[in-house]
Length: 355
Ligand SMILES: [Zn+2]
Image 1 (tube, rainbow, N blue to C red):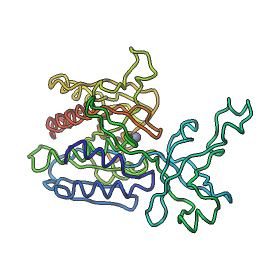
Image 2: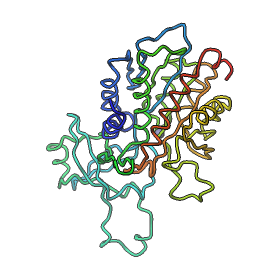
Image 3: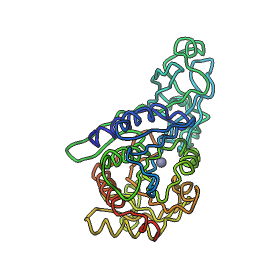
Image 4: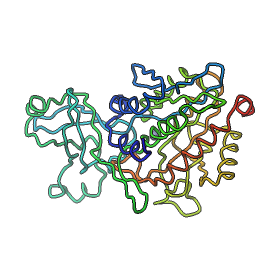
C-alpha cells in the first residue's frame, strides 16, 4: 500500500485511548499478508514478520494507536452531553469544534462542542478561560431521552474529533487529525511492508501500543511481551516552529526527521543516537535534533521493559498536536522512513551489543 494511503486511512480512523479497536483492525488488515499478528485484551498488537527467527536479536518498532479525545460523562435533561478528556488538552482549544460520539452499535453521531454563547456572557466571562466542565456536546437533540433512545448514546461512550484527512499534493502538506500518533503507526506498517521477505541480521517486530496518551500504558506490556534487544519509537511529535525563535526550533515541519535526545520519560542512548545521526549524514537524510524539556514517549517504558533496551526516538513534527487538527509534511515522514530502514539494515547482534 502507498504510504500516503496508509497515513490517510489511519488518520481518519477513530480510536481514543482505550477504544483503539478500529485502528488496530485497520492495521491488522494492512499487515496480515506479511506478518504474524498477536493481539491482547488491551488491543496492543505484536506484528512479527513471517521470517522471524528466534536465534536473531529483535528490533521492536513502536507506534501508539490511540489519539486524544473525550468520553461521555453524563447526559443532561436538555439533551446536551457532559464529557471528560482523554489525554492532554488545553480547554480553550476544545469548544466550537465538531466531534463524533460513538454509540454501542459502533455508529458515530456528529456533534459540536458548545459553551455559553457570547451574547449571554458578562464582560468578565469573556476574558476567562472556559473550563471543560462548563462545556457540553450538542448532537442536535433536545432531551436526555432523545440522546439515549434515538441515538443510543450511553455513559462512557468514546468521542473523537470529527476531521477528515487531506493531502495537498502541490506542497506535500498533510492536514488531518490524530497525526500523534497515526503517523507513527503508519511508519511501523510501512517499514514492515518494505522489509517483508528481506534477509536481515535482526528480527523486526512491530509493537502497536494502546493508551499512550493516558500514561504510556500499552508499551508497558508490549515491551515486556516482545523483549526487544533494541527499539525504535515513532512519534507524531509537537512542532515548535510556529511559536519559537528560529535558533530554538527543533521540531519544524519540512526540517526532517526529528531525533530526540531527551524528554521527561527517557534520556536517549547516546551511542544509538550517534549511529542514527551518522547514518543520516552519510545517506543525506534530513534530520533535526530535539532536546525536549517536557513530553514523553513509549521509549521510557520500553527502555526498562526486561533488560536495558537501547531506544531510538524518531519524531515527525505535527503542528497543533493535541488539538482537533494537525499539519505535517510528507517529506518528514519520508525522512523518518528512510532513516529507520538504514538503522535497521545497519543493526546486527554485534552492533546492538556495542550500544
Ligand atoms: Zn503521541
